[in-house]
Structure formats: structure tokens, C-alpha cells
Length: 259
Picture 1 (tube, helix red, strand yellow):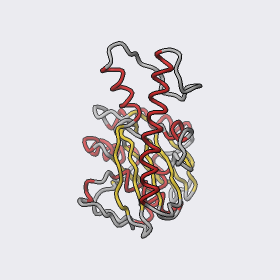
Picture 2: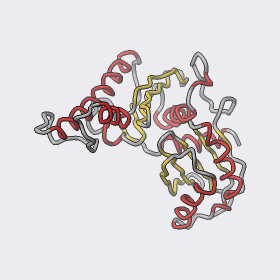
Picture 3: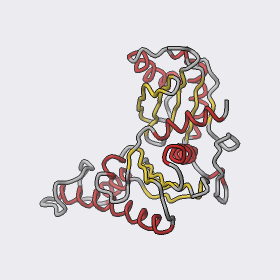
Picture 4: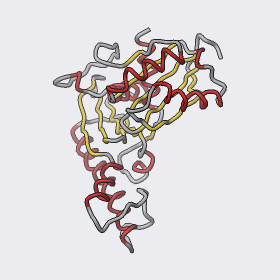
């Protein structure tokens, strides 16, 4: 692989950290690790480097490492990881970085880096106005308006933490897999819980999207990303597309803007 073309992009989330690799404009690999604030740079490297080796990717060939993170304590860790194993100073998406996206938020620095990256990628890929639903630890709804600006969004509890709250606070209920049940009416406690979690969460997502669609005319696309995107999109009336590479693509776009 040409040294001039290899770009590493990393999305550090509260639950998972996703690393992607681009060669030129081609997205050639991605890897998902669990996020742990107690891990060292060497421990993350011990997980990531064998995956790169299996894909025949040489970390020393990277010309850049671009990172967005919503876990500030891990910033020094990933900077060290980048310097030690990719021989690059990591470029972090943070206030002041060029994004070509006007932020119409009362305090722009409050907006998570991943939300800005997603909004930029969605605008460039699908046009504006556009709505991004990111199913992570929290579920976020981010809106790019007809002028192409980041207009704001909605934040709701994520599906997994909602399920965990149910399991931990109801003493007679037990943990079940969160998946779409075969029918709405459960015939036992487990399927009744699955029905409530799945259809209840689809109702939350579609309820918010219905209001957004009424407030924002001519939305070009409602696109979903994140861990539970495929699951919930399968029951949603409004989600039109799932793009699990949205954040990684946005990071590449930001790299190009800030060269």
C-alpha cells in the first residue's frame, strides 16, 4: 500500500471504538473494539495491530490519523497510540477544526464531535436538509437544515441502556436479548419484554422523526448509523437508509478539509 494514500480514522465512543482504514478514496477495512478508559495505549495497540496485520496493513505506512472522541480521558491514550504505532500526531476533531459546517447551537463546543462528523458526512452524501439518527450509548437525532448548517438535534437514552435499566430495576424481570420478536403480543415474560423493548423503541424513534419531518419540509434523507441501526431501521417507517460507515467517511472528509 502506498504511503501517500493510507489514512487511519478512529471514532471513540462511550461503548465502542471503531477504527477505519482508507487507501485513497477506497474504504478498505474497519474494526470495532470495546471502549475502556482504563486501557493503556499499548493495550489498545495489542488489540488493533493483529487486526491490521491480518488485513496486511502496515501501521507505519499511515500518512495521518484522524480521531473524533466523546471520551475526553482517552485523548492522551489515543495520541500516544498514534505517535508510537502509526508515527503520526493524531488530528482530533474539536472546536476550531475546519468542517465547512456552520453550527447553529447556543454553545457550539457542547456538540459532540461525532455528531458534527455525522452531520457533515450526511450533508455531503445525501444533500440537505438531512436527518441523522445515531444509535449509540445515547440515541442522537442530528439535523442539517436547508442551508446546509448544523441546526441542532435531539438526545434520547440509547436502546441498550434503556434495556439495562429495565433489567436492573425490576426484580422479577431478567435479561433478554434485544431483538425483534416474531409477534407483538408476547406469550411469556421474555418475549413480552422483547416486544416492549423493540416496538417501544421503534415508537420512540418514529415519534421523534414524525415531529421532525413535520417541522422540516423537504428532508432529502433520514439515515441511521450506530450499533442498533439495522435492528431499529427494520421496524421504522421513516429511516430510509443505514450507513454504518457514516462517521468514518465524515472523518476522512474532515481530513481533506484540514490538509
